[in-house]
Image 1 (cartoon, rainbow, N blue to C red):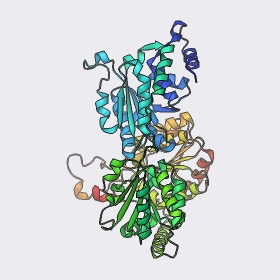
Image 2 (cartoon, helix red, strand yellow):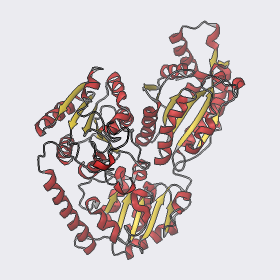
Image 3 (cartoon, one colour):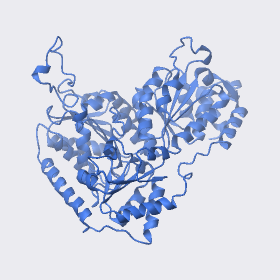
Image 4 (cartoon, helix red, strand yellow):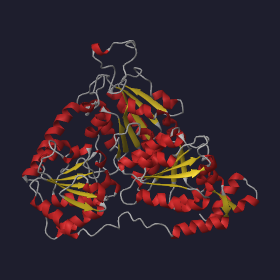
Length: 587
C-alpha cells in the first residue's frame, strides 16, 4: 500500500479534517514502517497510549489479535515467530503492560524465536516525576532482549522499526524491543517527510542476513563426515532450531542415505515422522548412553539433553554441533563445531558423502540394537495403552486422543501441550508426523503458554486444526483466552486433563497436615470436579464433560469435525501420575 492510499484509508476511517490529512503522526508512522517491513500480524492488549497504533495497523492490513492479558499475547507472538519464520509482534501499554509482556519476550529469548515487543511509555518530559505507568522500560527488558531501541523523536521511528525486525531474525533469532513514548506517538510530520523517512530507512537498512554470512565450512564438513564414517554407534539429534530452519528435507535425505538413527528433542518431533524406522525416541536411554559420535542439529546441550555429560552420556562421546551462533556452539566445547544454518550445513554434509556413500544398514549391530529396544519399549507402552482404565489414568485418554489426531491425516493438526504429567506422557504417546506441529513448555519449561500458542498456531496456519492437550493447572494460567478463541472463531480444541490440582489432588502425608491453616486445601489442590467446559460455553463456544472412553471418542469426533472453539473437560483420577511429572528429583 502506498503512503497516500494508506493515509486515505486511515483518514476515511477516522473522518479527520482535510488540513490534518497531510500530517502523519507517530502511530501511523509506526504502522507504516512495520507494514513496509513485512509484518502482517500483531498480538496484544490495547490501552493508553497505543490504542490508535493498533487501529492504524489494522487500517493498513495488519491483523491485530486482541487478548485479555499481555502474557498470553506475548506467548502467542513468540510462537508465531517460530511457526512462520517472521517475527511475531506484541503490542503493550506502558508500565505494567510492558512488565506482563516480559513473559513472552523472555520465552522468545530462551527458545531463540524471533519476536518484537512494542510498548508505549510515558511522556519524555514527565519521566522521573511519577507519570502515569512510568517505568524505565529499556532497563526492564534488557535481560530478555537481544536488541532494544527507544524513539526520542518521530524521525527515528522507521529506522528503529527496521532495526528490531532485522535483529530479531538475524543470526540466532530472539526477542527485540521497541519503546515509543506517548509524546512521540502524538508527534507529527508532513506526508512528504514521512515518505522520505521511510524510503531513507529502507535504503540504509542493515543487511543482517540470516543464513548467508557464515564462513566457509569445507574443512569442517570433511572432518564431520570422517567422524561419522569412523563411528561405530553414531546418532543424529535434531531440535527445534532445525525445525525453524526448515531443515526437514535435508535431514530426511541424510538419515535415509546414511541409515544413522535419529533422536528428536520434544519440539524437534515431526521433523521426521515418529514412526520412521530409524527413530530412536522410544530407545532414548540406550541411544544417548551408548552412542560414540553425535551430530547435533539445531539443539543445545542443555538440561533437556542432560548437558551432554555422564552418566546419561558416555564420557567418550564426540559431539558435532551445528548451530547459527558461534558463541552458543562453543559453550559446551564440542569435539567439532559447524557454525551455520542447519539446512545448509546438512546439505553440505550430504554432498560430501554423495561420492563416497556412507550407510549403516538395517543389519548393523547398532541399528539393530536401537530397533530392538524401540520395539520392546513401544510394545510395553502399547500394553498399558490398550487398557481402558476408568476413572481415567493418563494413558487411556492419551491413546484415544492420539488415534483421533492420526485419523485426521495430512495436514496434521498442530499440537499444543503443557502440564507436568500431561505433557510428559503426551511426549511419549502423541505421535508427530509433520514438522513444526508440536508446541510445548520448551527450553524454559514455561507453563501458561497453552492458549497463546493455540491462537498463534491458528493464525499462522489458517484453517488447520489446532489441538491443545493440557493439565488443569496449565490451562488455568490463560483460561480466559477461550473468549479470544470464540471471538475470532479459531479452529481450536482444548482438552483439559482435570485431576483436581497441580500434579493431582492432596498428596500430603498426614504429618504434613498441621498448623493453624491445616484445614485449608493443599497448596497443590484445586476445586474438585471444576467445570472448565462451562467457561467457553459462557462465550458461545462448545464444552464437553467426559469421563469414559466412549464419551471422549464422541466429543473428539464431533469437535474435530466442527473445527469450532471447544473445551473438552476430561476427568482424571486425582492420584494418577507423579508429582512434578518426570522431574521429581528437582522438587
